[in-house]
Structures are given as C-alpha cells and as structure tokens.
Length: 601
Image (cartoon, rainbow, N blue to C red; front, side, top):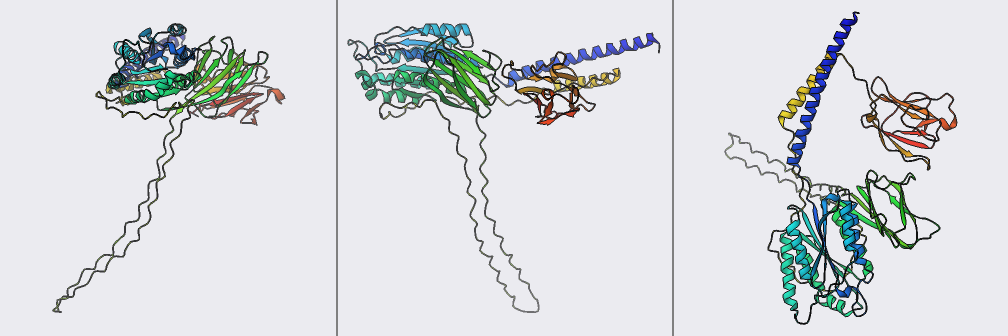
C-alpha cells in the first residue's frame, strides 16, 4: 500500500472525527444549559429556616429564694448544641440563627447568622458562652424583638421559628404595676401576628418547684404559654423540671427541625447516660445500624473538653474527621456532633479516651415507610332475577290467557370483607416533656392572619423543550454516521463497582472504586497488579477484563495449584480459570471480601 495514500486517508479520517467530536461537545453543552435552565424554572429550591433563640437571663436564673434555676448555665450548652447540630447538617446552608438574651429588656447578641460558615458558627458559640444577668423579666418585649429580627432580616420564603426559654413570670419594678390580664392579651395578639407571618413559637419553661416564683408560674402562666404556642402552626410548650433537662429538650426541638417537611422519620436513643470514664482504659460504645438510613447523627456530651472521640466503622477502620459523607462540629469542646449520610449497616463504635462523665445519643433518620393499601372489600354478588316469560296469544281462542310472571328468587347477601388498616409507625423520641402541673389551657384563639402553609413541593416537570430533543437526536445521528464512516470501533470498557466488605484490621479502608472511571478493559488486583488495587497481606493476583460480548470476567493470575493464601473464590467457590462475574457476586481473596456490583449485567 502506498504510504502517502495511507497517510492521506488517515489524516482525513482524523479530521472528520475531530469535527464530529466538536459537534458532540457543543450539543452536550446545549443540553446541559437547557436542562439547568429548565430545572431552575420548574424546581425551585426549598425555603431556608430562620431561627431565633431567645434565652431568659433574669436574676432568678442565678438565684431565686436562695436556689437558682440554672446556676451551672446549662442553658448555654443547650444553645451551643443547637448551633453544632444544625452546623453538622449536610444542608446547613438552609439554616440561619440569631440570639437574644433578655430580662426586663432584650439584648441582641447575634443577628441571623449563616450556620454553614465555620467561622460564623465559632462567633455564635463565643457570644453565647458568658451570659450576664439582666434585672426583671419581660417575655413580651423579648418576643417582639425576635419578631422584629425576622421581619427585617429573614428571607421572603423562609420558614421561621422562635424558641423562647424562660424560668419565671413577668416581673418589673414596683412603680410599674402589672395588669396580668392585659399583659396576657398582648401576648395573645403577638401570637396571632406570628401565626399570620407563618412563624412557629416553641416555649421552654424551666421550672423549679422549690422556689416561690416558679410555683406562681405553674399556677398562673403555664396555661398562657400553651395557648400562645398552640396559636402558631406547629408551636409547642416543653417543660424542663430541672436545668439538666434543657439539653434533652433542645435536642428534641433541633432534631425535629432537621426532618420537618422532608417526609422522613426521626428516632433517637440514649446509648450512654452520664457514665464516668477511666483514664487508663478507653470506653467503647456500640452503635448498631440495623436498617438502611438516610442519615445518622451521634451527639457526644463530655464533662471534660479534652476527652477524645473516635468513630470506628463496621469494618473496624477509624473514620477520619470531615471525610466524604461525614461532617463533624464541636471538636475540642464539651460537645461533638458527628453526622453520617447513608451509613452502611453493621455495628459501629464510639471510642472515648479521657476523664469525667460522658453521654452519647444516636439519632436515626429514615424515609417514611410507604403505607400499604388495605384490601379492597369484596362486595356480595348481585342477584340475577329469573326472566319473566312473555305470554303467547292464540287467535283461535277467544280469551287471552294471562300468564303470571315467576317471582325471582330472593338472594342471600354475603358479608363483605372488612378492610384492615395498617398501624401507623410510632416514632421514639429522646425526651418527652412532662408538665409540672395540671393546667387547663385557655381556649385557642382564632388567628386573624393567613394560616401557615404546608411544606411546598416542587412543581411537576413538563419535560425538555422540543428543540433540544431535535438537536440532540440530530447530533447523535451525525456522530453515529461519522463513526461508521471513520471505520473506528471503540474498545469495550469495564463497568460496575468494587467495594471492600471485609479487610484486615491494620489495613487502611478502601474507597469504593468505579470501574468505568478507570477507562480500560482490564483491572488488575493483587500484589502483582500494575498500578491499580494492591491487597496488603494477600499473595494472590487476578484481573477483571471484558470478553467479546461485553461481559466482565475474573481471571486468576497465579501458578496452579495456588498456595492456600493466594486462592480466589466467588461466592465461596474456588476459581481456577476465567469466570463470569454477575451483579452482587462476592470475591474472596484471603481475608478480603470484595463485592462486585453492576446493574447492567
């Protein structure tokens, strides 16, 4: 063959291929931009949460009748748990949080602050850590300040929440006499305004039955607090009998805010409650994950900030902080929050080293189970009447005989099957607030504003514009024709995933490998593999490769008979020659167990 002619044909073919690839890239970019514009038009992003924490810092928190409601300032740790918990959420950019302290007057500590920014979270934790006493108590002024913050700074479509912590009744100097009924009516009017503005009100009442001021609150004001919270769409009153209940109460509120409107179910359990650590021996806490979860959050409360926390996965590997699908907040403080997206099932562990007491909570979020339709009741059969015979007229006879119709038989009705309704799954909460006294709440007032709306779902998509499909189809046809014209044939590439399910304890964890990203028809595994997967401690070697039909084969690469430590199995059966791999097959290589997943096979 003439070399010049061969070079001319090769150059022409390459030029045609280059032009076709360029057209394909232009088409892909057009598709991407059209899809993005269409998604932005038809699927608006969900609204953010704007939260204001309003914390009572009146003198009674430090001293009332010689006994303070919260002298150890556990209310500070409750606020910080709110910040750390929301900051560890994978969608923490949905949340903004503001802080207000109050006594007789409100004091703004922080405006609505983005919790996705670690530096801003650190500032929130700092300003909340050292509260100062504020004389007297005026809950109305504090709630008005929180409402004004939301009106002036919240995003237009946000979901708004106010969490009010108080330990006493309204109190101010003697030269300002308190008209309790008028004050309660102003509070009711404010609650109606919050309802009209779609703002939920949560009230945390910290009581101490040993003091006279708290006894008056239980008798005169608990019913008012319940009425205010019930006026808003999802508001609620929580009662903390002692300061130690504040952390569980705030934990329950923030946990439910995370899953609100997502169609998920949140469950909590205490894995450890105020257990002392031994300085000489680490403490291992078992964390079971029995079923697939949307997310798992571990909250570790420590008496000593220096206590170290390490999470060990089901394969025995320590997990690095802030790795993929994991977020950690509160490192080096008295509370750490670890959040995992779609954790694998198995037995996890928390390893604790240090001194002092520790508490560990586990929050599990799973999708709402799809309700099973009840059986359709079986209707009784419809009775079929006996047809009435038609009388026959005989003209030779003068009288016309009258034939009486035969009565249809009476049908015996059959009992219809009773439809059985499935029970609604019950969510287990970490903390159930108990009222300190039985109080009859006042009738719930009717809000004058627009009622709160249910969670907004995305508008159904109507499909891609017709011109984009036409352009895409044309480009695909051109590329296919150009490929045939060029005479080139693409080589088959491996597809599927490899995931190490078991490995030696001293081996660093393997990441799940997407074979398609390797861009090749062969993938070598073992000690003699060339630049791909090495399995420390295993003496064998095998290769994954494609056959002519596009299937994945496993081919051993060791002398026969193989040494015991180098043998290869598929689903427990020894492999000595090229063997077809199917989706879900488990490859055994010594102590290693590797699962192959490929829905295309």
